[in-house]
Length: 420
Image 1 (tube, helix red, strand yellow):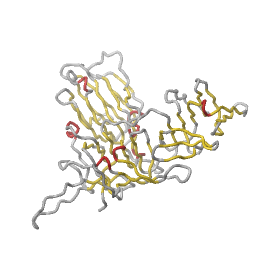
Image 2 (cartoon, rainbow, N blue to C red):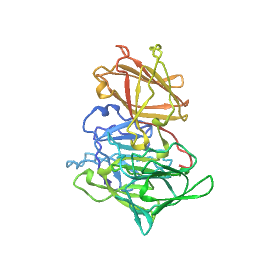
Image 3 (cartoon, helix red, strand yellow):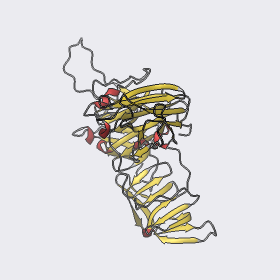
């Protein structure tokens, strides 16, 4: 068994062994203090733990057992429990993703966005006329148009509405539309109308947005505190020991080579915010188009607020969603998906909050729960076989009082396309 990167799973955690029917994680753990991480299983269930362990082979999350007391020869030895991660088509894959509870990567500061979804904070520099991006732990790499989606130098500059051309937004708010054909000391934009070129100094640019197709992602995606989101080919624990679990290192590998940043390296565990194995299997709930309608017990309601997205920089792209009832929210989802989320009454609502939550798969009720100060939290892992998801927030015993629920890291787990 490989050595492990330290993050300790509590001995009381109800973890399924590889080959068992499902990882039926206990949702009551979300209420207990001291848990820093949420493990999201392949079946959508979640487990809150204080820490976790990644094997040096990178194929499993393991429990790091404390040093056992001396045992007699008759006593069985303790064996660390081992959870396979969701790589490839392994039937024993249990862990789909891990996220630090309550942590959101930084969304401020200059950054690059790549065609494969990578987000790379840092700063630009010009070296002998060549545009170079300096990243804190990936190193320096040349910025070219191949693989680039956006360069954001002024985070407050508004992103352009969807257009059929590249857009260069200048510091004074002016916009140039066309095709960006050169990056360097100057940015050269070729106009669509007549083929003429416009050249502006790079120092005057606030952001550049290119019209490009998305690239297929890698098997693993990692998010870190500094706002980095990066596709990886490998992630594993290391043999090095630190003073504590958060001081240990994880080793990563990614596509790329000379001139495109480091293809291998290490990062401190304390910098991690989230990891997803097979990220193409995760679809954020915040990307869905919702249809709102009155709840059957509150038909006289004249206006229903749309779901509100919070923390847009959340890992997995799964922004927190708040829904206000009484109301019914419906959306089309890929058939056979699993709805996974942590659900709670917002803290300011818990004194008076009183509502009923129902999850429906087409016309079939899959799950229901009363939320109040007595029971303000839960986790859900619900298969949606028909592709018709409905979420109902109904009035509780005291009627429609503070009927608002917050869905944290809400996502659909599905089988990715063959290219992912």
